[in-house]
Amino acid sequence: MLKRLIRCIREYKWAALLSPLCMVGEVTMEVIIPLVMANLYDYGVKLQDMNVVVVKSIQLVLCALASLCFGVASATFASKAATGFAKNLRHDMFYRVQNFSFSNIDKFSSASIVTRLTSDVANLQMTFQMMIRMTIRCTMMLVLALTMALRLSVKLSTIYLQVMPLLILALVCLVPLVFKIFDRSFKMMDKLNNVVQENVHGIRVVKSFVREKKETEKFTGISGDLAKNFSKAEKILSLNSPIMQTCVYACMLSISWVGAQMVVASGNNPDVGLTTGELSSMFTYTTQILMGLMNLSIVFVLMIMSRTPLRRCCEILAEEPDLTSPENAVTEVTDGSVDFENVSFRYSATAQHRALKEVSLHIPSGATVGILGGTGSGKTTLVQLIPRLYDVSEGSLKVGGRDVREYDLEVLRDNVAMVLQKNVLFSGTIKENLRWGNPNATDEELIHACKLACAHDFIESFPDGYDTHIEQGGTNVSGGQKQRLCIARALLKCPKILILDDSTSAVDTHTDAMIRKAFREEIPGTTKLIIAQRVASVQDADMILVLDNGQISAVGTHDELMQTSSIYQEVFYSQQKGGIE
Image (cartoon, rainbow, N blue to C red; front, top):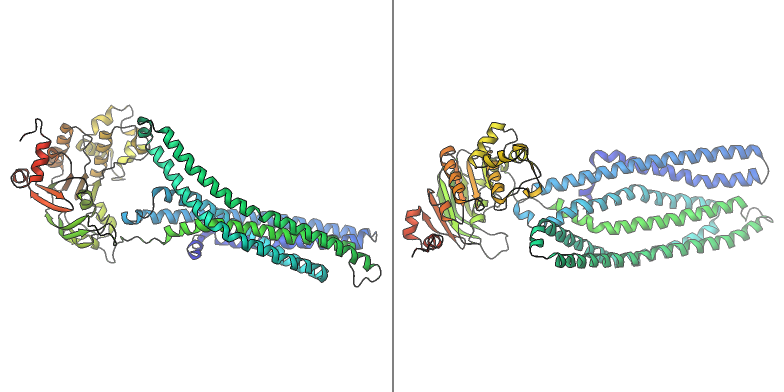
C-alpha cells in the first residue's frame, strides 16, 4: 500500500527530502544550545570571565538563529510536499474512478468515494506532513539528546533507559484497542455522508411527504454513533498523555535527587561529580528526550488514525478497471449495424441469475428499433452492452461488424450516444451542457440539434436563451425540458448509434412524435434504439423487440406483433382509451 502512496509524491520529492534534512539541522542546533549554556555558566558566569560570556552569548544567538532558519525551511518544504502529495493522490484516485466501468463503480457507493477523496485524503495529508517533520524531529531529538546526556553523565542517563521501556509498553497496550474503533468510525462516516447526500438530493420528496423529522432522527442517530465511537477512541488515547507526564516528572525528580548529590560530591572530587551548568543541561536534555517521546507517541496516534484512510484510498488505487482498450485496438466504426450473437450477461461472475439469456439479433445500420418490456426485463442492460459499459458474459456483441472488445473504448463510445433513464445536467449554462456532446460545436450546430430535439423553442423563451444558467442537477428546468436537452446533447456527437433509454417519458405525445419524425428525416443513417413504455413511441419503428425476463419474446413490426405477440397486444390494448378488447 505504501508503494502506491509514495508514487503520489512525484514532483514534490525534493521538498519531501529537504524537509527532514532541515529538521536535522534544527534539532542539532537545539541540542547544542544546552551545552553552550552550561559552558556559559561554568566558565563564564561562575568564574566571572566576561570574554567567555560574550563569546558564548554570540554562539547562543547564532545557534538560535540557525535553528529558526532550519525550522522555517523545514516547515515550508513539509507544507509544500504534503499539499502536493494530497493533490496528486486526489488526482490519481479521481482519474482511476473516471476509468472505472459500471461494475467497478458498483463496488463503491458514491458517498464512500466522496469521503475517500476528501476527508480520507486530508487525514493522510496531515499524517504525511507530521511524518516528514515530527517523526524526524522526535527521532533525532531522542538520539542526539541521549548521546549528549550520556556524554555528560552515564549514571544519570540510565534513568532515561529505565523509563523509556515503560512508555513503549504503554503505547503497545493502547494501540490495539483503538484500531477496530477507528475502522468502524470511518465506515460510519461513509454512512453519514450517504444520508446527507440522499437527503439533499431528494429534499423535494422529503418535504412533500413531510419526512423532515424522520430524516433528522436518522441523521442524529448516525451522527451520535459516530461521536460515541470517536469519543471512545479518544478516551483510550488520552491515557497516553498522563502516562507521559508522569514519566517526565518522575525523571525530573530522580535527576534532581541524584544530580544534586553528584554536584555536592564534585566539590570533593570533580572527576566523579557534575558541575551546576552540566546539571542544568541534564534537565534540558531530560525535557527534550521525554518530550520527543511524547511527540513521537502523538505521531504514532495519527498513524493509527490514518491506517483506515490509507487502506480505503489504496482500495481505489488498487481497483483495476475491468474494461480496457486492447492492444492494436480498432479506431474506426464503419457503420451502425449491431449484432447480438447468443449473448448472455451476469452483473457479477458469482451471480446465479442471468440478466440476459442467449440473445441473438441483427440490427442493420440506420434502422430504428423499438424496445418494450416490463420492469426488470433487461431493456437497459441490453443497450448498455453496446457502448461497452458492461462486457457480455457469454457470446459476442458486434458493432459495425467488429466485436466491441476489439475497439478502442473512446472511439466506440464516441460513436454511440446514449441518453440514460436518469437524465443528468451539470451546473453551468445550456451551451456548456450541450457542448458535452461536442466541445467544438458552433452555435448553429447547437441550434440545429436543439430543433431536432424540440428544445429550441423553450430555450429561446428564457431571458438569456442559450446562456441560461442550469442549476446543479437541472433543478430549474422541468423533466421534459431536461430530457430534450439531453437528447440534443447526444445528437451533437453525430453518432452512428443513438440510444434513447426511456428518455421521452416526460414529454407529451405530440412532442414525442415530432422528435421521432425529426430523427427519420434528419438522421436516417444513424441506428436508433428507443426504449419506451408507450407503444405509440415505437409503433412506427422498423423493428420492435419485446423483452421478457431477459429474453427476446418477440421481434417484428407493429402489425406483425399485433398478430403474434400476446405481451405486445396486452401492452397495446392497456394503453388505448376505452380498453379495446
